Length: 385
Image (spheres, rainbow, N blue to C red):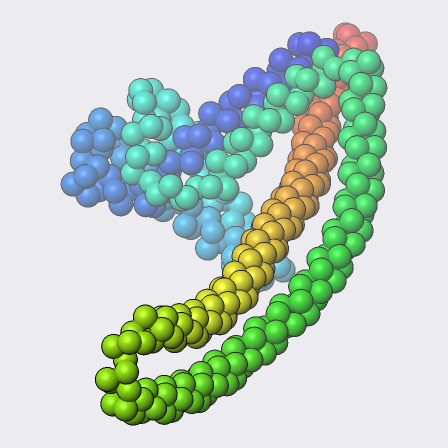
């Protein structure tokens, strides 16, 4: 067998064989029972007329022979020692092969037949065949690329792969560092949250004490000023009675001492006003104290709301950091899966190309052997003469 690299002519022959195989598989991908039943219905009547009765008959015969071939192979698999079943399976295979070639030849003569019949199929009807066609196309492109690939390109690809591996290692280190930083941030946030909870508890307790103290002080002040008011009323009543008695007794003498009594009356009125002003002053002082305490409680509540808002912002920030970390992990996983998929695809294509090359080499070897055999026969015939 020849071990040299295939020439351009050999590569062109391989590619032409692959093109023919793709063409036949494309025609056979629409040769399904589903398409046949659609052609026999009203929706596919126009396409059936375009195909013609001969091609429709060939189409139905293909479906029938495929079913017989499947049944014969199933029977041959169940009975491996049966010679008649194996012979029947071989005959069915030979007939199916001839009918398939004839069907592809006739379908080739009908323009746009694949597109028309594809519309009668479901979307995922022949997914395996379509995937095989795509793989065959990729293998064809890979064969062309392999024939033109140089040593420098292979070296650059290996260097690029090594560069991506180094980047992956650096990304893993960075990920570990980020996880450590995130853990430290979480612990710091938990400590800060516990401190804020303690402060909030103390503030609530202080607020409850202030409320209780306020109620007690209001009760004490109310009792105090009610008692003082009663005392003042009693004193005022006594003084009023005394003054009325004096006025009744001294009404005659009051005319002479009117000026003096007016001064005394004015002093008494001023004293009464002074008492009223003292009461108003105490009440105002109490109101101002309560207002200051209320303002202090409001400031503390605002500070608590600000801290709560900062905490929510930090929670949102850490959620975003976690989402970014999950996204990076997902991207790394996708990159690994893509790399593995590409490597598996490359291995599969290499195996397929090796199989095609071995098949071609076998054909070349048989041709060389046939040529040698004919040459020997010619030499033997000349000697007999």
